[in-house]
Image (cartoon, rainbow, N blue to C red; front, top):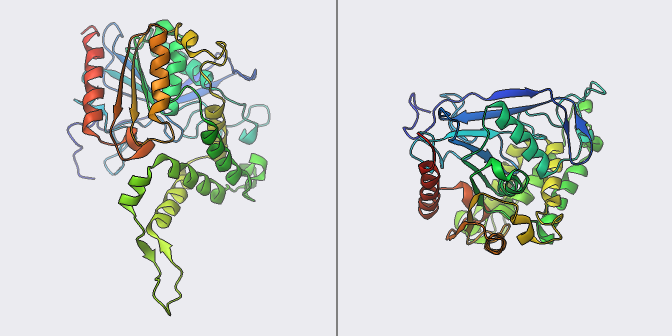
Length: 384
């Protein structure tokens, strides 16, 4: 990393922690007497606190959405492509807040935290979470920061599900909802992928029924396989073929040579799995994927998405990507159709991209244009 950071970066950022002492009763019925949320902010909150944007992260995301933690840090935040001065979410105009969700493993209260009832890590005993629990904790964080209404709430994938839940639970607390590469509920195939990944973790001998920290170990192999399974679903066949083809990392198919063959794509997946296992908590992965599986926006509205969206008061931008088969454009069109049926204001675009579900994180000129134009409109409504 050079001594200076890119001009369009938010620069060096420091995570903050808010300690909540007001009890939070979760959807499962369990009450957390106190909890912590780690978050980052970028930009400046204006005088009437009307320019705040909330970022809701996806499964493997966290609070570090943009900027760098040090000059030596070679990896910026996970959405640095779209958050910063002059970028789609322009920090010259917006005050951006991104929390690490409850149940995560990047500092917010979760399975690695101490269970006050036992003095040991919560582990597998951490209470079951629903998307609405994240929304409630995010609302409380906004209140703690003095934000009564968000100019926009933005999220991709699981983050997009949180955005939609926000629009129903607290319709007067946001003016715009940006839902990217998401769905109103998971397909059976998606649930199956998540369960296969969870079984990989739970089958690891080091899992110890979720209490591996008490045994001073982690189910690294199982978590690595879980990540490999997930990562395959985030990429398209085209993207994998373009990047790896059938190129070999080692070994040979020549007659008389018996070195074991390893394809480049195998090496890449092993790297991704090992890296993830070093940085993510297995219980958090299980907890978050189950919350993802349980999400069904219309369940309590007679399974009628139009009825559900009649509660919303904000304007919507919905974005999908052509090669995303995990959260396909059809799922986004279902959201748009329901919003239209409910008489809500919605803009929709399907971005042509060969990079599958991961496209919502990657540079794409058409995506940048659409995202930037919409957020400029949001900024235009904000008091200077």
